[in-house]
Image (cartoon, rainbow, N blue to C red; front, side, top):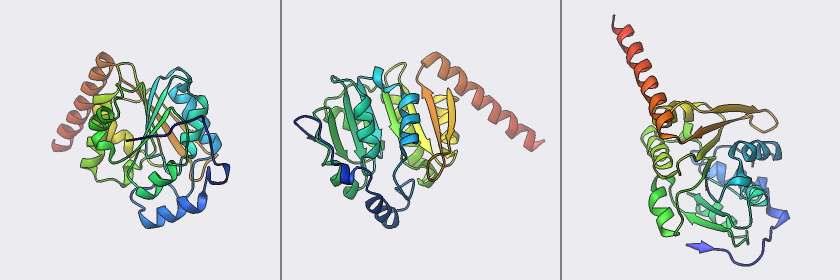
Length: 224
């Protein structure tokens, strides 16, 4: 556990750090969703989709060099908490440059979200934001991540995933139902889709049932 103390302090020289981002992409392409950090346009779209100003507890999966993390901190309230979970030791070390009492960084896997929240004495998050590339993960791992998000998200909470491909929807829809929205941000390299799911037990259960029924119907039709 590593909570940075003192007032907010950001290193503008390494805030985006494209070279560091690209180097880690070359080292571990399956763990990095893009060759360069997110643009300010994508950051703003994520902030709007997640309604960060109203959130008290936020988890960021796959923060990379911390550009999005810093943007989120600028929009969170003074009593909010932001926990980042990063699988790359290199990126995790870079996140140590963020000195903000609201921020905690953790080196580990999003699959272990429940244990990580307990370790850092953090309640169920209002928002989970994911930049990890679902399209590059083994499907079993991706499903466990989606299950962990649903299982630990607060009722009425929001799951935001920004992705180049649509795989995240194929994996998450059977678990959380149809996304409330999906927008495309072209002013980013590459262009990114921003998906938003809301955790509502009644609505999600109905949507999941519809998804399962639709898949069953298609399967039966294919066998006729």
